[in-house]
Image 1 (spheres, rainbow, N blue to C red):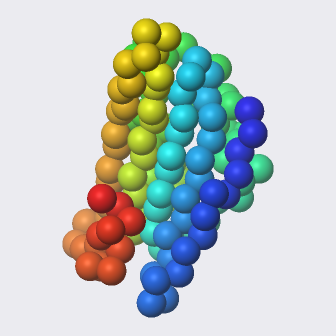
Image 2 (cartoon, rainbow, N blue to C red):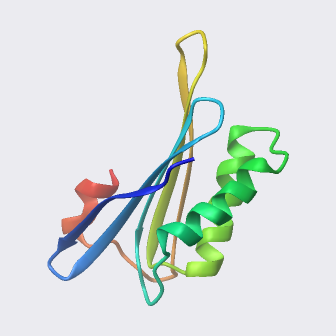
Length: 116
């Protein structure tokens, strides 16, 4: 698995970090977050993500919730969203989505277009 920091964008002193990573079985992870104090190193995230993917996950939703919950609890970003896309062999596509934010945090209007 190859993991890269796809983009790092600054918006009026608000930073949004995006990590895209291919997963197993035609899955693509896209994680975007507004950091508070901690940021994740791509190498560390890749190692941790490899472990999560290898564990038995019965559904795409289960994998997405597990990765999203653990990431939020460890890094505690101000705002995050996680989407895992899955392309089936018959051509249909689906995804599972996880969003979480700190209590009382309101996403600045300037960042709405990034997260929508």
